[in-house]
Image (cartoon, rainbow, N blue to C red; front, top):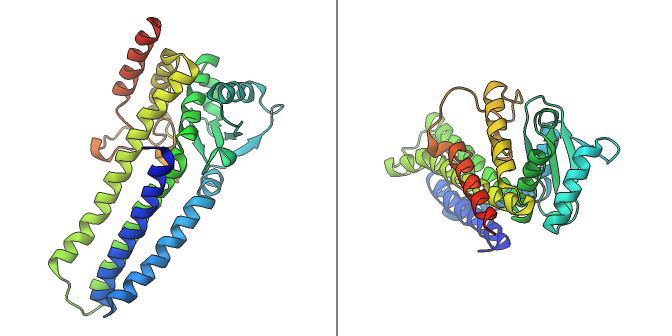
Length: 287
């Protein structure tokens, strides 16, 4: 399935899901199934529009990313330009995030609005080949329209959580009895939405690793970069409070020492990512 079809499917799912939840909430709390469905149809439409047009601006602003030109950082700009040419895409906007934690991400709804952002820390941590591998990974996200896909998935997960909280508020402060099945649905829906979001994120990271290795033609350099970034982010996690954007980064920037259940992880296991890249490197050597 192509990137456009996947994105369209996510948008359609959001509309259908919101209408269904609105229909249920309307019936239980508004005495009108139709009114609830219509209200949440409008909410879904607004959230889709915000995700499509403004999510990348919100993300860049939240991390204080600064757009740069070639003279501001010739090394990074040259590498991104080279990778974009090899990937046969339009040169994305380049930005630097003022953080000592080495990391990078891409955002934007399409190639025309794409931004590749690197932290100050990654420029000091990686050599040119490793940095090229990371930028190729981010360009891989751009080619796959992953930034938009993840923005929509994140919006959906956040909206489901908001709706669940609203239902609980009505339960505690209202006087209506709630069907136990409906209550269980409202408890499980946010968990399910988060699991789906994280599963999508992990799959997109694997695919971006593969595309990045193919673009840079150096899987080992990307594998080396991932190992370095993983170790550094554990020692020096990002201090930003915007943890909702963790899935956009090449490695989890909030990867503190506490362990999370694999099911809720925004990134695939690092050992598995590195193993796949090392295997690709072996295959490349026989070509």
